[in-house]
Length: 482
Ligand code: NAD
Image 1: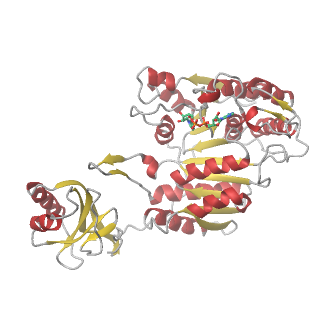
Image 2: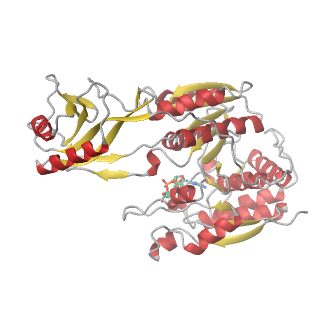
Image 3: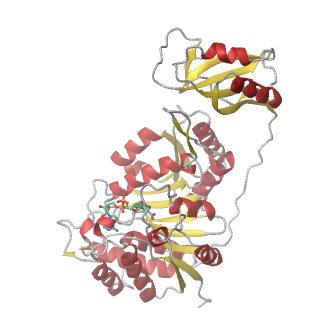
């Protein structure tokens, strides 16, 4: 036997400690070759005033061991606390969230017995960056950031996952009919990467109909790749369709680190009662063993778990008329341990081979041609309370002869010049300014001087966005009605 890898274990909050104990007991009894080091993160740390929920020594342990098995954490409501899960994913560079969703019919009730899909969710950007601002009495804003590099990395990960796991199809979901630049970039990158995998079928769904189809026809899907927020939502839909949020595990994978967990939260409503289903965390641990190269042990546990499920030994969350015994967390893990070495009879047994542990994973990256970037204008967002009455004149008065006011928009709708629109309710407007020369360049100095004159004129500018062309192509959207 090779020397045992060190893993970090976080017992978490709520039902976390109960399901972690059950999971570790199964790993031990199955002969998993691991040295466990535990860290304390989450609620207790927040209560001690550690606002991140993670003390420095926990980071040190996680970074040294590289692999983390984590029970769910309670995120305190209000008080400005950042989600510890999001902090960990971003700090450790865990860019891919991988969630298999499988049905166990007829033993776990579901309307879709043939569902077997894997959702690969981008984990580090999108609206989840949590970059938000209050700008005026009326308006708050959240920035959606999508990069080509992160899109390519997650999409390539999804195709590589499909190849390695004998999956046939990768589906992209986005909303690029509306968000043509951000989601458009994600979709376009998908089309480009897909060409490199001719043996894998690829298709695309707009996220709304895609989510609807996951709930009504989940067997249309094999591997799905999507952005962070959409991935969060469809993962829970898929988990619910498969029978219970208590069943599925997930892997968070980065180039250097990996974190494995259940998909559900800390379930404070049932904490301490000994009734939680440990299966989600156990599935996370099975994915961890495969990642560590201990495939045979992973299969031994997974098959014992399938046998337990098909014998009808079920925790309360999946208990139904198909069940034979309603058990608590400890009885459930004891039942799995008693079946180690057995295979399921009706459900399909799983097979994982022992392999080299997954190490530092660097991906191929496409060469992207650097485009010529030209500054052609600026959007100046202002807080202006009196509808937009008087605003065009104020802005025009602050322009020098090199600049012209093109439009004023409110939430993407052109309101000036536009006699059709009467907008009285809001107080955030976007003044679009271009060079007076057609397609002329605008300098940073001219923009800075404009802002100075706007301030002198009493215009409260709250934000600017520069308008660029890349190789002559517009790098900004037009307002509706523009
Ligand atoms: P939840 O997943 O904790 O609970 C939703 C429902 O599912 C509850 O009725 C719960 O009893 C049930 N449930 C969940 N897991 C179960 C299990 N293993 N066995 C049986 N029943 C189970 O979601 P929530 O109530 O929205 O969130 C509770 C807390 O968990 C919040 O503080 C939230 O921020 C946090 N959370 C953490 C993670 C994580 O650490 N990865 C993920 C999601 C939510």
